[in-house]
Length: 312
Image: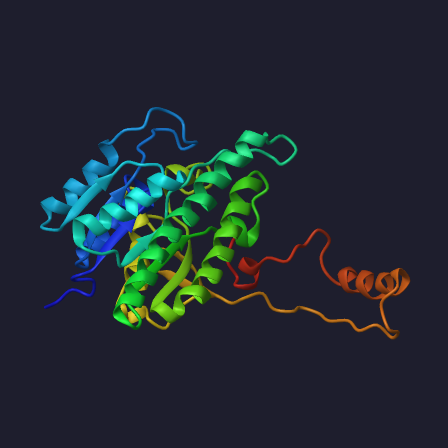
């Protein structure tokens, strides 16, 4: 029986460990040929010498299971290295069909203590890294669509975070980058729909190097199901990469364990109209202060809370 991704090729960034590794293995299991990208630095803050080891090991694991895979050890936040990554997939497998952006680093600090370098580095890897690969993949699909005279097959799955949805006090750089990724995803979805390409984003909750502090109080079970295992996120990525997800475009999903939530776009919670042509300070004070007085002190709006999801 044909696999859902048979005959398709994929790029997965940050795929040497954790979520990216699980996603690359799942795409291969579903029949895709995979380019495994990972810079291979040991530190979750992007520190340490780069190494081909992690990417090569995952690619070898896919080949050992009968799949097709190639390794790429470039930095996706570098424009030309991102170009080379997309070109490698085209050279190795004839075309690119699926792009999964997962690469990222952490440099956590409160906003009043964060350095310019800590801000820039996280925005660079997460947000610019997503843009770079998306840019070259999109150009490839546009050219193919023009040559074919119609839509082609293309899927983008980006990685956001509940840090964007619910806030994360010690991660202003990370939360901002993840919010930017959602904006990039929705814009890309609109721009590429006519070419047959979809773009969606996920907010995964999983136990990885990146989240070891977040889940410090939720240790891995000694036996039985681990709801925070990265492998529980990978099936959604496989689905979004498949033909079955053709109608899912510009969507944001929260996923962990046995749960997938489709996040609605922000809705208007309350609306006020001035009794005059425009509002004055005094009138705004009267209506808005009363509105917020009805809510618990310190409460802030968060889409995740509306969904009934816990902060992570």
